[in-house]
Length: 294
Image (cartoon, rainbow, N blue to C red):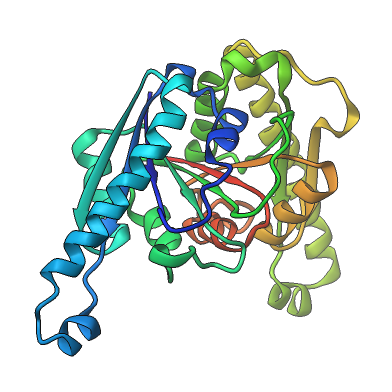
C-alpha cells in the first residue's frame, strides 16, 4: 500500500508517528511525505519580485523538517519518501497522488473546515472531491486511542458497499481488535412531511425501514465474505432518521467510534444518502476521523 501524507512542517505534527500506527496498518506501507510551497503574490509584490532567496530558505527548512518526520516513521513502515513541489496544496496533492499511484491520502483537517497554516481554506473539500485516491482525514489536536470501534455508513449503493469491502480488506490484520458498527440513515425531507398526507408518510417510513434492513443485511454479507466475524451485539447495526452527516457524526460520538468510513458518492434517490456532499460535509465538519473510500 502506498500512502501519501501532506505535511504542514510548521505545526501540528507532533503526534504523527503515534497517530498513523493507531489508525492504519502501516507496517506494510510505503509512505510519501509531501510539502507544497505555495507562491505568495503579496510577498513577491512587496519585495519587487526578488523572492528567490526566501523560497530557497523555506524549502531548506521544510526539507529538514520532513527528513525528521521521515526518520521517525521509517522504523514503522516499509519505506519513506519525501517530495517538494510548488503550487496550491490541493493541486499538488492530486498531482502527486496520480503520478505515484497512491492508495490512500492521509490529511489533517480541523472540524472547522480549515487546515492549519499552509493548508488553509477548502483544501480538504477539494481533495475529497478531486483526489483519485481514498482519503483519511485526521483531526489536529485530537487524542487518538487505539482503533477499536469503527462506524461504517451504508446506503445500498455500490460506492458504500465498496467502502465497507475495501475497509475490511485493508484492515484485515486488525480484525480481532476492531468492532464494526453498520449504520443506515433514512430521511424524508421537511417539505414532503409538511405537504404529504399522513398515510403516505407512514407508508414511506415503512418502506424505508424495510430498505434499511436489507441494506444492513448486505453489509453483514460483505463482512462474512471478507473474513470478518459478525458482531452479535444488538447495537452493531443502527438505523437513524434525519440529516445524514449530522446523524453519522452524532452516532460516532455516542458509540465512541474512532473512525467513520464512507463511500465517496452514492445513489440520488431520497432514501439514499451517501452523496458526495455528505462525505464532504463529514470530512469538513465532523469531529471524528473520516475515511472516504473511492
